[in-house]
Image 1: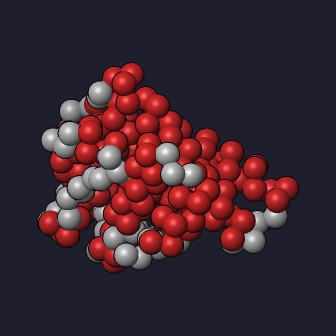
Image 2: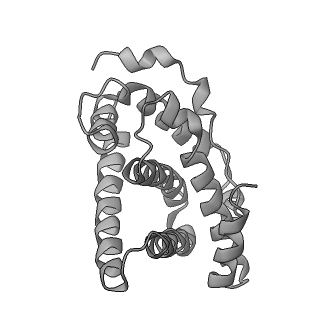
Length: 194
């Protein structure tokens, strides 16, 4: 597994508590999906630090939406998953050579961006049709609200949201998730009119 190293580091950092291990396992699967080559090669997501972070955020939002549907009972696990993500962000920044004095500020900026996107995507998912979701994804991932590639990404996000709705919360809190294959979303959707 490509992310075995991430799991071993994370387990050392977070201990062996079953909930923490499950959160690390789930986060690792989210990262794997967010790094699917097809999302960069066919969907046109920029293969940059920002592009990767934006796809990670989208997939985290999708999982957190699913957990939220379970009510307060899964809130602690959602918090643990969020903590794992931002602990990983902190570690990644340090590995990239960001100085100790700037890491906290950068993590805070990433968290603010995450919450902004969480709000935008939640609002967009609740609206009928995909226009709002295309616009939010276009703005946040492609840098323009009317990005033609955003239509296909919106269709993928809707498919993932539906797939997650059909998965038991207990599966997620055990550290497993199944996302749809982004290659299964037709390419011609990128030309879909708003």
